[in-house]
Image (tube, rainbow, N blue to C red):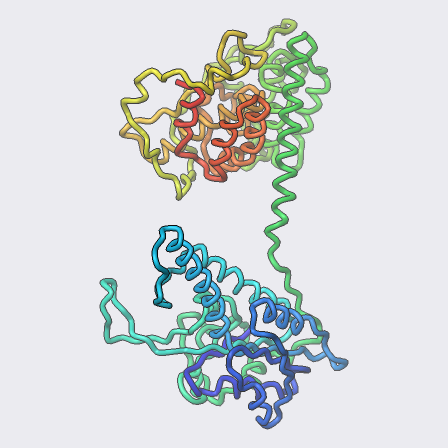
Length: 550
């Protein structure tokens, strides 16, 4: 895809018409926008192109581009060429479309305020959301042209303009500006500037044969598109068709839904295991031992596989199961900690010959539900690890859009919260809570202090929200956040607040909204849904206070 930009009457269209007669290509499809001279250049010596008709609307122009891009090669196997004349008119068309919408909006606002409509045709503002629409439509044309397996020539106007300084004042320096969408030079293979009649300069060219950096301007004497294509090696290419695979962002929907289904299944399994454990029915010891062994020997990320085993069964249940391990007989939760100590930070086992893992850190977790007693393990009680502080994990960068809660009041957190109507109407707590306790009584607000850095406040907000999510999906908090705790971690403060946790919170939000609705709290569901994809949410404390959390 070549951008042929030039000043007025510099020979852009002439060169494109002359190229249609090259023996490097088969047919040439000429898509004209606003120039009205397409038939005129048919008299250029050797020119042989076909005008592609359209009605001037964006949709019809897009259909014309798609039709031309998918035309098959001839029997000689030579690629077809497409000429779009001009890209400047196309960008003006997209801007004019949004100007019409902006004028209509202005007239509607005037009518609503009972004011006379403006008679000034320039009295409107094209908003940023409208420019985004124009850019998306522009991208549809570019994407259609990329599917073409032959040369594409895009003609565009170019003007010499004055450079302004940082204060907005004009300087004596001047530069060349292409009249089209500003990213166009980055979308094409290379740019040819015609700064006068047939005075050509190369300004950026992606090619192993003719490599010109974007910041370089190289004179190109004897310019013709046929010569340029030969210098790029088009005459030496085989007849194989070029393949272009367009990005498919819609494929993320299937991936996202599959991950939500996996999380829902995992949490459902954990809830069922807890219910069975409350009746004294624990998972089979050999089944759990095999699951831990398979995770330890997996070819993928062993750390993640081990943590998934813990999340699947629940740390409190695993702590009640005594299993045989290479380190002796111990409870399953400690066995996972032991296996994690032999896993390198990359997620793979430590290589042979490395030092033997030290005893698992931290005491054996106390079971949250009653069950049969567990035989004492042969290992001595290890010394507990010092609990990390609230600092986020290395490399963590807070959401660039994160801003502190505008309603934050340092003294407000010291005051008791008034009773919340939403909290008063809540149903009873899950099985592991007493019947008289409020369902949100075990939650806490994000701890904010005046001296906190923005990243620390963001981490606190994420820890507060992930505890709410654990409660709503019916999974113990430490089981819910097991993938984000260090080996032997037993405190919410040890949650590592990185980008993986941000993704985890986003993925679970739809389930939490559903849980609020099932609890008969549609207003809470509506408010929580407004968090959208923004993690951390600066409004989490306000939301928790409305639920009665203090």
